[in-house]
Length: 640
Image (cartoon, rainbow, N blue to C red; front, side):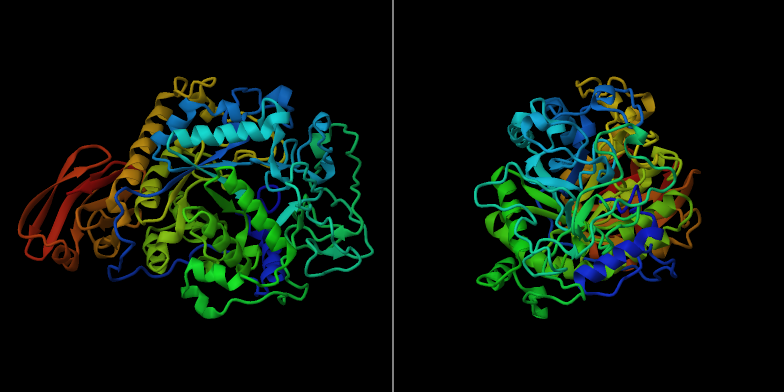
């Protein structure tokens, strides 16, 4: 979810998030910040992950569906579908899915699937018009959902059969051995929510609300009683659709009384940087932050999914809780295998206990990933909220980003992993997603190759899933000015082609024939690394950092990071060089690891799983070392 135009990483706007957390969760605002640079860990810390699995780790491939299959390279700012083109469900063919599978993917997160507000005339299909004054971009934000029981008509060859075309994509995805994730956005919906395709007996959000009061437990929304909604005052010369004339673009939107805005603003006229295209959903949290539902006892942090499900049986629950349970069940019945929950921390943890235990009761294997940015809430949302995985953005991603930019030390990596030891399996790692800057963007690192060492560390350091964002594997730079939003991130608001990705797309062949030599090399690196992560069971094993003991070693510095992964049948040493200069050092293993691995005096041959080159580990008594030479931005994954 984007806080404003592009502001997930913009800490100047975090007051909006903190306000919403306060309003939704009844907890004090917590500043969103990167890991503080503290003294390095002086002793190696070992944390044992879950027992080794027969295969490697989960890999999630995030696809922004509207852009993925689009071969049109016009890229006119604010361009229409006719000008810039749009990707369709049917573009995602067997070749595309095989290419995703090559990257070790287990799941495809189809982003932007649900029917959201969009500036296009679909009235022939019974779909009401959306107002440009409360839509971001021409194609609209995928996080302003208009109909939870349908899919975006832009993505269908025949909009009348849009749901059937998505169901066919689910079948094609499953046929390639991949599973399907879609978004659920429980904190907010589009300002103009109207479901055409809801099943019998389902009521729209807000259909039965008492709009004469600010709050009522079973209202779906909060209201600014007695005041009509006013469109925010634009900033920096902004004009909807770039200034293009439109019958509804008049600076007005009919909503009386006004509803609270998605990020928690209670103003009838929200600020331009608020999520003004959305309205906040009421979960039984009163305006003073207190709760209008049963609370979970603290000991439920240690209880099972079944016990959580039993707790909610027979309870009188707010209407919004039941609506989102019905939505989740609807998509599970369609063959969806899991969900990515947008801005989960802005919704009370008790709701997640109810929803996730309901989902797992229906499908025990459902994949549940949540966007949570407040580290103080991680354990509650995992243990009480029963999330499978959370974003590791504020800790691991932010730390790796600083190292890639030359602004941070690899000491932070050791600190993060130590601090996450009890929940590391649940913290999904990524270097790109739709909210973050592209690595190749000048505003980030300016060179996609700088992701290589970070990707090795991110993918192999823990047993958690790894996520890739489409185009990352070929160095997409996100340099386009597409309309709403600024370059450095690939647009999620407008119609566009994605240049580097289109070289792999190759007019629907998905064979990479148009990739440059450097892009091919980068993709080959990702294929090898992610396939390794997905197939080697050792990366579900135990972890031990080797950084602290080697900090004083000649040639090893705070632009280098090394660690070991191991299980009962395999041992691996990983070392990465984040610097743009080469380095050479004798990496030492601590005595306790030598003893645990039962290494006796002598030489052990190691093979680099990334390059096939060899190395030798020399063991003398209780000490051991291996000579490692790393080129700029190079890593080795040395297996016994």
